[in-house]
Amino acid sequence: SSVAMKRPRAVTRRHVSAALAGGATASLAARRKSRRIKVMPRVLVRAGKIRRGGGVVGAVATSVSREGRVDMADSVETPVVAYQHIKGFLLQLAESLGKPSEHLRIYDPYFAEGGTVRRMAEVGFWRVINRREDFYEAVRVGAVPDHDVVVTNPPYSGDHVEKFLTWAVANGKPWFLLVPNFFYMKDYYSKCIAGSSMLYVAPAKRYTYIASKGVAAASGQLRNKKTAATSPFPSFWYVGSSAAQREAWLTWLGTAPSELTQGWALCRSLEDLPQDVRDAAHRKLAPAPAATSKKKAGLCSTCGQVVGRCKHTR
Image (cartoon, rainbow, N blue to C red; front, side):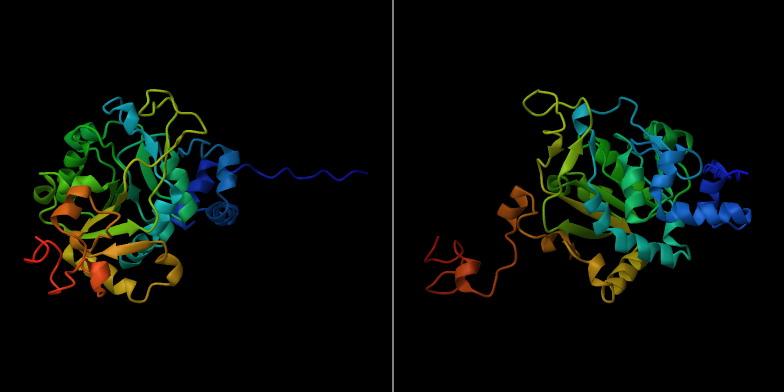
């Protein structure tokens, strides 16, 4: 006689919810499946809970969009390495809130191809909200979803960055903004961040982004798989928070494991930015701190002053 094999049950929305809720009210089977879900994103992909484009249905996250309010040239995906560089900050924040990292609610108001959800899951964060909706309308009607922190790479065109900064500071939650270096030289920047305690996370190697399908390059030709990668400007994370949270992060850095602090430099102010990350106008106005070597520092060999500021080199 043959023995009937029991067909395994598919992963359902109930199991996904259990993975996020910790399984407190779920059945034993659901909790077992939830533990697998946390460490096996492919299970969700096969079950249809994570779309291959990155969007997640149900309780985990939902892909979201800008609804035609931006230039298509703005539509690029953030590389996973950029999220890895701020992972430690998010882990510390989750710990300070008394939450496991997979329960930290991360909000990204701007949508490109939905890859935010997938890439954040790769780094270890599952409650990512990135919906196909008009962020500005959500703000207007008071429909912004509950969240613990904002992590976003917004459109660079128009006044999107200015509007985001204005909202983020008033929002009162920590925020991570990934934009090119020239934005801190904008006239509105200092005014917008007033009230936030700032840090900057500068990568050792320039971030390379992936353009969305249908986006044209500067030449006007549509990008394909071979030309999708783009890195037109140096970019870094602008990190805003309360003074207490900023100090908590600085304290954490003193004991952080090396794997969470590699590949990037923490800058306490814009004057600490590495020379190759600074905006060109900033480099002219305020050169990076002089090195100890006179030759490297550009010092006058006669009097030792900075070249161009003494009578010998003017």
